[in-house]
Image (cartoon, rainbow over all chains, first blue to last red):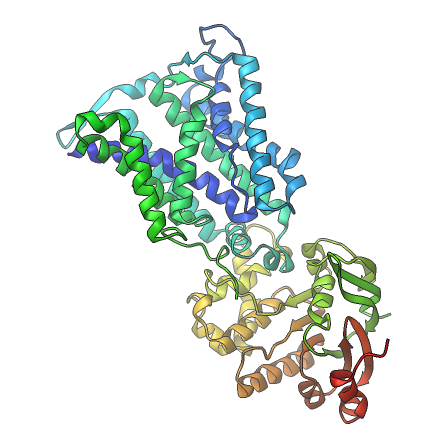
Amino acid sequence: MLQILFDALSLGSLYALGALGIALIFGVMRLVNFAHGDVIAFCVFALLWPSTDAMAIVFAGQLPWYLLVPFVLLCGAGLSVLCEIVVFRRFRNANPATMMIASFALGFVIRYFLLMLYSSRPKSISLLPTLSQPVEIFGARLPLLQLITIVVTMAILIGLTLFLRQTRFGLEMRAAAENFSMARMLGVRANRVIMGAFALSGALAGAIALIFGSQTGTADIQMGASIMLMAFIATVIGGLGSLGGAVLAGFLLGAASVVMQVVLPVDARPFRDAFVYGAVILVLLFRPQGLIAARGTKERV
Amino acid sequence: MSLLALSDITIRYSRLTAVRDVSFSMDEGEILFITGPNGAGKSSLLRAIAGVTPVAGGRIDLAGHEITSQAPENIARLGFSMVPEGREVFGSLTTEENLLIGTGMHAGDRGWRARATTQLEAIYATFPILKDRRHGQAGLLSGGQQQMLVIGRALMTNPKLIAIDEPSLGLAPNITDQVYERLIALRAQRGLTLLIVEQSSARAMMVGGRMILMRGGQIVLDGDARTLGNGEAIQAAYFGYEDH
């Protein structure tokens, strides 16, 4: 039972962090950033030396954790800010559909860039191997990594909440998410807020890359896409642009996946995702605006 | 030199021309009402000055700087503060957070909240109701309280000129009276220049000052509110037919 709870929490953590990365950017510029998943993949590959060999040549992956973690977070933030400057800035006044398509294209550019450097074969990496040792808590045997995932995610969520509530920059971001042009009329710098959102979102992608990379032990150029899909669904269920909603829905999706894995009859388990998406459709039928509707996206009268 | 000068401003929304060749200027400390029927282009004009609506032609100068098609945040830095139509309160933020946003541009990152406190106290002295509701969600304030909040929020940027779009919209007449009372007092206290858009010219006649009457995207009358108010010209401007 406890095992299920922890499985649900750790899977939910990944989805919640992913959803948060998408919701942050959606909040300030109404962009659904489908390149987010590829930023995650990029962060994983940043640990390896570029080569098309089947064997992974570890580069940054060998660093001690206190250097490794900032390195990956910076990679994510850096790439994300670069995407903003090079691509999304030109689309700032475009309609959301155009921006979304641009983000798809950008995602492909990143993915094929990785493909070119690293080939498409998944590579095995052992990232922070000490973390796979099991620990015993309340009679349940859990991998240490699972525990760390949950603790780190909680710490990130608390840290982000404090940042958004207590700092001037956080206040500006919340104001901009609700009403961007009003915030600008009060002197909030558009570029600063948008780049800040991209940097935060990219750092979150880096965190996911670390967690996911150590969990799966592989680097695969497709790996961002699977999380991205779930994370995107979580932002939609949570109410696009609502950070709290994105986190809540991320954890709910994680829980739904894990619980269905357990309660579904054995024959139906391979179709687990169909059941999860079925539940998603049900939620959206009853609450099309999402669990927690964001204010800025509501229709103005 | 005038504080704000517009020359030959034209604003278009795709093929619709909302404002055509409008020019006027304002001196420091002046109070100017822009009135006119719905669709006259009053709000478009304010939004163009604020930098949120692009102009198709013409030039805007504020305090000696050209601000035509500048970013809104830079125009705010030159001392222009806007209270838009429908107020646009940040409903999910608290009252105090709404006020604090405008102080960001004059403060460093560290200790900005502490430094903003004196400014906050000044606003709370003018609008005591905001102090009572400082930690409450701004979206839950009444219409009149929200109007006070957005005027306070606009003042927090330390502006030279405040532009207010329909301060009486959706308010009971006695609340509107209160709002205007505070505005007049603030103007005297801080030496503010006020640019107020109202649909009806009645308020301009009561308060006095200069009045510009717009219709169909152009200025039809410009003069002292009290003398204009009694003339037949104003009736013609509101109800008459345009003679093209």
